[in-house]
Amino acid sequence: MTINDLPALSLVPKSDVAQSAKDFKSDQEVRWCPGCGDYSILSTVQGFMPELGLAKENIVFISGIGCSSRFPYYMNTYGLHSIHGRAPAIATGLSVSRPDLSVWVVTGDGDALSIGGNHLIHALRRNVNLKILLFNNRIYGLTKGQYSPTSEQGKITKSTPQGSVDYSFNPVSLALGAEATFVARSIDSDRKHLSSVLAAAAAHEGTALVEIYQNCNIFNDGAWDKLKDAETADDLLIKLVHGEPIRFGKDGAKGVIRTADGQITIADVAEVGEGALLVHDAHREDPALAFALSRLSEVHTLQDTPIGIFRDVKRPSYDRLVREQLDEAREKKGAGDLQALVRGNDTWLVG
Figure 1: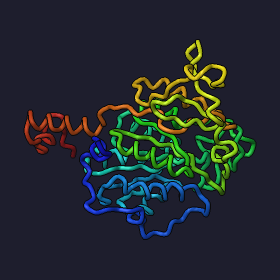
Figure 2: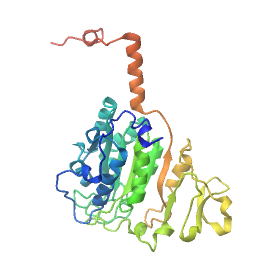
Figure 3: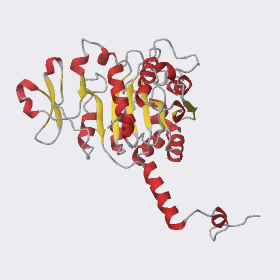
Figure 4: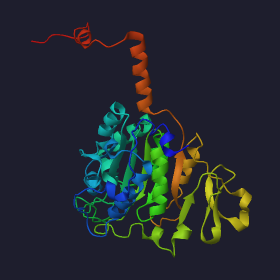
């Protein structure tokens, strides 16, 4: 079975010619600040798109407001730069009405989790056939450096000169709490890892949320440096791989275990033994363990930060269920009569 045999992409027309990353680069000048992590994500997505083998005119990128929301201009596909926080709602309408399209949403931590919070969680719970890329730089970049819903408590910014008193959102925890069927996390500069996560997201039927740690080198530079530094990354990053024991650190010296009271924690493998390590199960129907993994990371130090696919479970997409309802209604009642509906007992003539 290939990626295009799966329900998420089975109705999307395939390209009849070989494609390369160049085919997905638009003629627009890319205008982000030099050094922005968005460049890395854009390059990775453009390099990944040919793997889908889809016709470019059947791929759509929809964004809201923010630095990340310039993304559709730079993709040689169809695109829509929508309004603040409403990209998931607009993408829902497009996905449900056009099953022949592969629909992607590009958003940021402010756009998605502040004004767009309700739209995001309802897209997730409905399991609409969307792929949502959430760029998280822990700051408002477009509006010049105010704190965002993912900024850590105590963060000093232009809008919090004495430090933020807010508790920050954990996007992965939020998505899992909303019963999202696919939830993952990656890093802007790790092209190989991000590409593998994107491939899994594209193959998934329903809403796939991918949080991407992205650096804003102007207003929050170095937010994720500890996770990228070769000297510290091994001891901080927990790479989740389905079917494999969860261990990390230099030489795999540390791992994740379940304690007697049912909690999960970090332990030295030498002390507890390899048999005590939890084996990651991304296909586990109950999201409780995935949620517990999402809570391991320490907000300020980034200690014990999991990346990879937290959850990937099968559930019919909202789009498919709607189409099945419509097909069933047509079989039972035939073509609908719009005039009969307009002139029915539940309508009134005003004036």
